[in-house]
Length: 309
Ligand SMILES: [Zn+2]
Image (cartoon, rainbow, N blue to C red; front, side):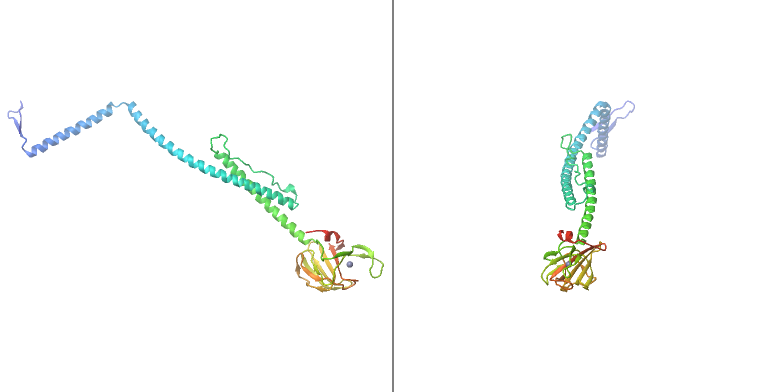
């Protein structure tokens, strides 16, 4: 096919032969350029024609989608947070119960140790139920939870301080108690008391400086308190005697033994066997003459032997 273009300004008409391949490509190029140009123009025209109102609507739609997504995420976060708070609340409840038990224990120990109640106040109750939600929506207010945790931490600090003070007091009391002469040094019956009595040999009035406890020869004699043996041997009138210094002003003496089982310098504990009863020295029969000295003065042992540890 041929296209002939006739122009007024040009005398010779221009002839295009469509059979020519190069010409066909050139025309195709022109056509494609025209189409692309029209499309671009149309788009620009559409942008120009679309009102700001429409664009705002589009933006709002996008924003609402974003907000929806964020809201979903927030629900997830809230669920996690609630789970954490619930777990914390349970843990807190357990700790509060533990603190209450510690208080009860402390109070009991104070009573058992017969310690001054004024120094300890284990009856102070920890804040219980502080994590409950005042809004009723199932959310514990983090501030309330934080306050409860702080209160509980203070409570535990106070308990720890009080319990260690209590422990050292009880330990001191126990050591003190172990050092104080308590109970009978030997199984038997009291045949003679402390104080004025007729001398068993002369019959004259004499001052008896201890307790006589009648017991068969060979009966084990026990230390009535912890201490150190300061004398083990013969003393005039006392026969074979043991003396123990308890280091707190107290000294005990066990006389008329048939056999001595400890040596001077030896440390003895409460109830340790120190000798065997007998009738050595100035004695009319097998017994233990028991003396208690306090700060260098002989005292009546009766109250001590009647006490229990
Ligand atoms: Zn005596």
